[in-house]
Length: 178
Image 1 (tube, one colour):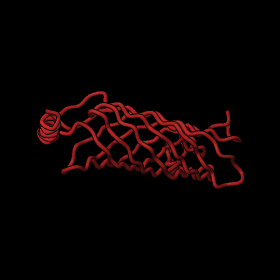
Image 2 (cartoon, helix red, strand yellow; image 1 turned 45 degrees about the horizontal axis):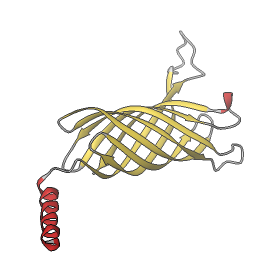
Image 3 (cartoon, helix red, strand yellow; image 1 turned 30 degrees about the vertical axis):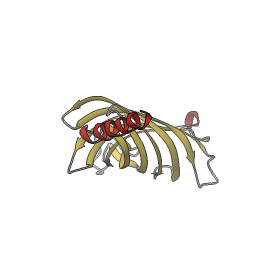
Image 4 (tube, helix red, strand yellow; image 1 turned 45 degrees about the vertical axis):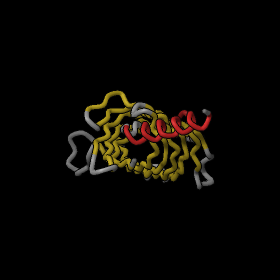
């Protein structure tokens, strides 16, 4: 009797696994973000070819995680940030929690919160904490590749800056691979 129940359970498990769509799983992600800032040398009504908005930082990120039931995902990430206005390089390592707000077909509108540690190779600045909050759109692509467009707020706790932090808003483009 015991062997028959075990055999039935085995076949039931196999048929369940093979008959349903996967609703989650592991993934890799990466993105490039550009931060725009106010040009401090800009003057109104001056023809010196200065623009009001200029690029001020570039961020590269890569991570891996797991998505649960197409709604919630956790990931562990690392990256490189460079703020050329302040000559600051940083290496953030952080965990992120992503929540899919809405889904149409395989396109997803989401919000994401991040928290972690930020490492600075410079002796001028100490290591600090990293915080992030953003929204984005993940568009389904070929097979398992997806394109991501995002708008993020970043806060880097760095001693020596105004209020001991460096805040920025960035626009990003990236990918996810399930």
